[in-house]
Amino acid sequence: MKTIKLTAGFLMASSALILSSCGGGEAEDDGLQHVDTAATTSNEVIEEEIIDYAVPTPNELFEIVKLQGGEQKVGIVNPLENREKYIDHKSKCLNFGVYSADLAYMSCFGIGTEFLKYFSAIEELGEELGISGAFDEDLMDRIENNEGDSDSLFAISNDTYFDSYLYLEENEKGVELALIMAGGYVESLYIVTNLVDTYSEGDPIIEKIGDQKLVLENLLDFILEYSDDMMVSEIMDDLISLSDVFENSMEFEESGTSIDNNDDGTLILSGGGSFKMNEQAFTDIKAKAEELRNNIIN
Image (tube, rainbow, N blue to C red; front, side, top):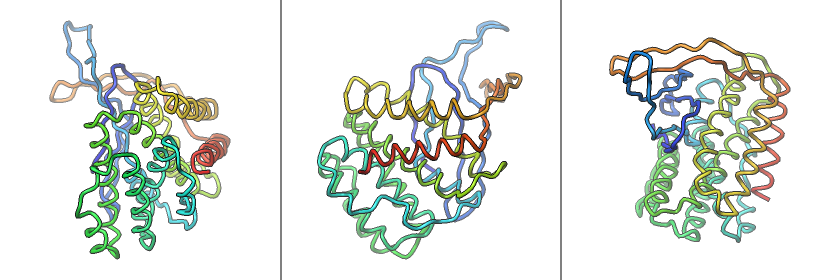
């Protein structure tokens, strides 16, 4: 499992996803906010200034959705014919993220026939964006040698996304990274919402859609650092509008707050309330995800 860590200088609610491989295993979501703290008195706690937030890669989201009963649908990825439309820097970055999410979905759900073509599109966009160094020279050989193995292709798509993230971070391409992650998030949310035809209370996939509210908040906090750039500012406005849909449509249920100590001295804060999905929220989030996705790919 490779979970992207976003560093932020302020505290907010987050959820951790602990996932197994797409080929099997079990998934766990503890719903707790883990905070490293240092106690100076029995009643005083000082939070660390730097907190790491886990934002799942598209692979990990599809992984857990599949484990919870999600079934593949053909025809919901961004068509490769759209590739020729992406001629400016912003659209190339956003759709690098979109096609990366598409690649993760196809490999996780065993739709491997188009894998090589979609990977080639990502590689081309990477070259045009100046991030070709993120692609291993032997990567294409790995794909060709594992073309019929969905688990291997899934691992390759996960490695590609993670290696691209590291390359962008190490080469101080924060604007590109912010746009790519935004595109990947929107496409992932669009795909997952379209794996469900009708709302059903207690559906684990619909509940996982609700969890994306916290993921989105983490992502917004991360890309805020690059919001001085107009391209990032524009996509951030779009993501904020999506966040508003989550906030306004979901039901907030209050609960008590508890503080527990781990054996290593780490405090675990839990409770305080949570947002719950309902039919209106599912409908609104699905519609908003489709709107933002269409703005990106068309």
